[in-house]
Length: 342
Image 1: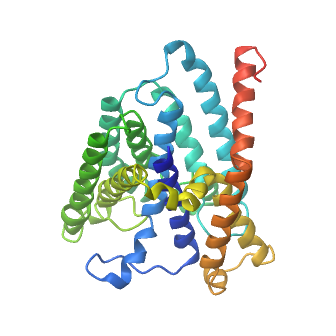
Image 2: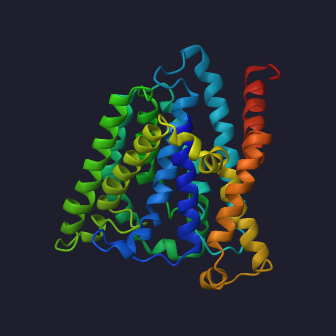
């Protein structure tokens, strides 16, 4: 869907900003800090959209029939493995940013049992995890084990900067969205209003409580804090953005959004490209985050990425990494069923 590609492209560019720009803490009442909205929220939007995509490729509003579920699960397992391996490869580079893809692969894996779930079950699961997950993550982070060598390896393998016990909520919420009739404007308006309401609750009700309660760290809305304010507020923000993008692409604005939609049509390729460029710009050496940011790479890299993705999408179609992972998942499904896939 054009609107999903637009939202996904916005998330990718937002992650570029979070990595390549020194973003200020967001204060909604101070306009000069509004570009800080990219910090943390972009990656959560990316995760929600992953859930939307999983739902769309597994039947959309009508989950796939039981007889097709086994093949879909094998393809999802292969896709999860490929994404996890790509994430580990990027995490081993000297680029000093946290890589979302190992957690992304694990979230795809966790989504497999839910491929035939309908929207109410998915939204219920998302709400439960969003409310409980911050306290689980907060308790786990209190362990000194993460500071040990083995803990460091585990954090890389799990993508713990995006902790699965909480981020599973975003995948489940996205799958719930993908199970709705996204061609119905009334559904989209309801999603927009619901997401906005959740954002207000997270940022204006829960987060202020974090400053006056003993367990405030588990309630904060700070980016990448895994607090309850962030899970509800930024999760709701992501839901609202998805709805707004789909609504926008029901108008002629979808044609103006083609360049950003092109980035969203090949998100893994675009996301990975930043690591390649970053590594090349620093001559393959480990360098402080500020050393690359001092080169002011955001606008040149973003504009070049948009131009290349637009040309690639219009002339070729799917991105190279998307094609490779798609081929691997089809091959895995063919082997699993004992037949050769075309």
